[in-house]
Image (cartoon, rainbow, N blue to C red; front, side, top):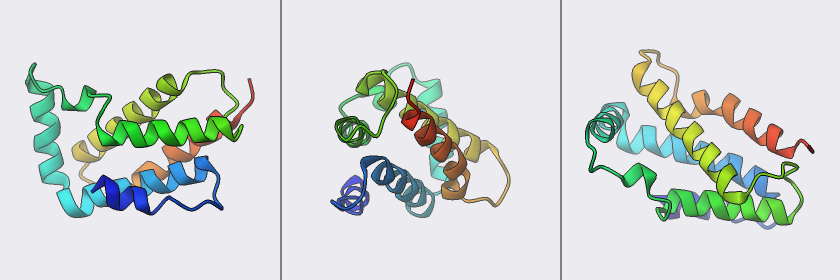
Length: 132
């Protein structure tokens, strides 16, 4: 799954923050279309109930590694204005994504996970670009 999504953001002509935006959109689309809301609810409720379930916290899982590499690339391109570390920014983005998924699971609306994620993702990326 991550390989499919990652391969779609390998364009050299694109800045890293644009790649990050596309990656997140495609990830959210994949989660909704391939996993579905019901399965995601089970996964999230299981993670909340189990003290042994640490998958979401594993910083070596593909999701974290891809986000981290895109943030590193954005920093190298000077697309990120914040002095936060790559790990701090990666964690902020990952926590935001989990929050969007959680909200989507709780919400009875027909809004897609991808469309729900777009405003927050744009806000985060725009905030990261702001020089401080």
